[in-house]
Image (cartoon, rainbow, N blue to C red; front, side):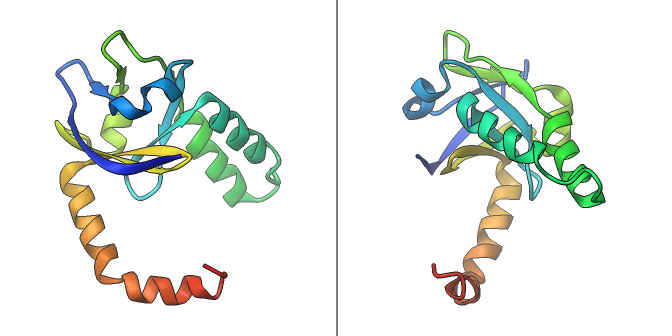
Length: 143
């Protein structure tokens, strides 16, 4: 399980260090893709294959299913850790998520999310202010 917040920087070649505690999980490779809320998602190969399988079962006749599958699959890129535990984030993914230099890598159960540091701070502050309302709504789901 991936949890926690980690501050990292992207170098001039678009490389980002994966937090040390997660590197073993990504050693066989990873998939980085366009995420939601203006961030990137990074999945282990196993988690990615499970998600891709679910996406393949969405009804192709529904436009929202097609759109979501396109977002996740067409925007994806296989990445490998280099000898220093870094992955290269392609330019189109950095542009999509407004990544500059300072980032936050957030562990979110089965994936990592990569955020521009400023966008993360704005998002986190807004969610923290709404945490009671969110908890009340999720209570109906048994959480």
